[in-house]
Length: 136
Image 1 (cartoon, one colour):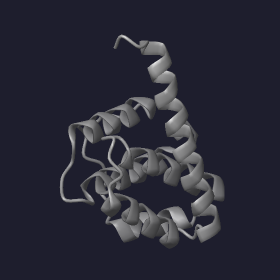
Image 2 (tube, rainbow, N blue to C red):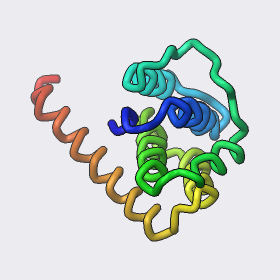
Image 3 (cartoon, rainbow, N blue to C red):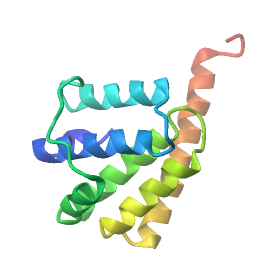
């Protein structure tokens, strides 16, 4: 959604975090793989290329040194990824919450981002229903 705003290095580190987020519950669902593929297309990145993989703490420290705008984009996109499979996975959401903390995002800001992502996803799913129609 907002990933085009990231620099090339930020995109690579984001991809590391997206993969780590998807694995946070011990398994990567097909819908999460598809979301990561969409992220790669949005960022014009080769989804099969292995980038300079950073450990989660290194990636969080990297983003802690970026602007609040960039940090918020990363957390919003990761929260959306957590819902890619239609499940509210507690391990994945806890993983993202811990990342936000390590990145220097306040609890208040994180709560607002989480609330906004929830509202966005609800609206998105409602719109999909309207577009598909009742017979689908």
